[in-house]
Length: 472
Image (cartoon, rainbow, N blue to C red; front, top):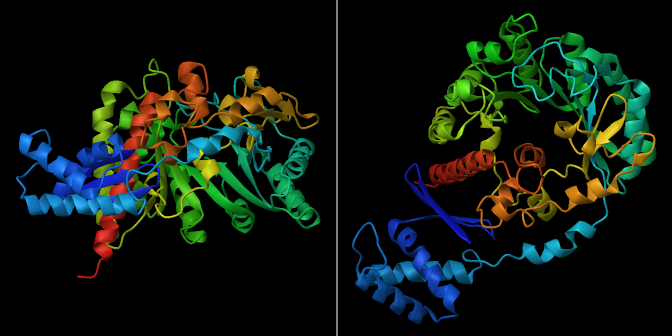
């Protein structure tokens, strides 16, 4: 399977199964589909492929932007066939065979999302957690429950050494003392069990202070700082419960955090909605504030929400990603580079096979833990008791839920099978699929459209940077 597209003056051809990316000239771009068609019919010798291509070209069944001579066409065909022989074009899908035993692999839990606080001091309009309550009651996690969760993770992680724990909410800083005690407990058992905890913190920044920042800089591998961009956008969507904005409170704290971490191992993370379809302006604004690690992502909401992204918004949003990609390149050239999470793509190594096929691992490798110790597949399922998997006292009691999530991959989703992006997005978010279709084996269609555009932009950026780095 190949995917080809034009972006920012580059003719880009992606061989989906091998992950090979080629920047080609117009003639190669135009005739690649015809060569693929020839090779799919049966194994042909190079001269047979060329003679058939030449005949089709003369008959007008192959359309090109320009008229080409026989010599130019022959050279282009030879170039394509060389890539094919090298295993870099028209490659077979080797992963579909691998997936047969994929669901039989041993379950090893490697990450927990600890809902340290089901409470929040903001009233964000789009919050899927209902101001931190998650369809239930307000509550703070006790140290005892958190300790049992870490003990469960150690026991369920098998021989895996590196474990991840995200302190999440609501707003986790509302329960900061327990966060500190759990970090200290985790560190105290690392040597005994041959484990290494990677702690992260997601916060809205309202309660962030010097004492918290000092501790986080010592112990937290990553900090996610929530902000939606420009003051008017942020304050519209992320107000206090009394309606007053949060922008002026958090920006100086976030700037201090970013500098104190040497502009690494953090993200300012925003959400764009129907109200700010020009979200590239929010990314630019965050970059202008001095942030170098930025993520601004589309809201996921049913269409009846006034802030929801709708089908009619899509053409504008797709153009906005193209606009942002050009701004990204421009600023790099000017020495004002920033990282945009969705444009960061590894074309050489990339994620392991299991990650490419199954995604985030929710429901088996990754679990969310409520303040009272219940397990759910991820934070977005919390409160839906159809997905209650067990608890910190009894462990996983609903192995059927775990097995359902384990079987969820790009080959069990019909819409993923012929999608060029499947090995980059790994089938998308199971929670989003459930929200829109009532099952986890479908996809969130609008999200897929945006994801495909982000991947195209990310690959174009790689091509542009490689072009810039070429010796003149």
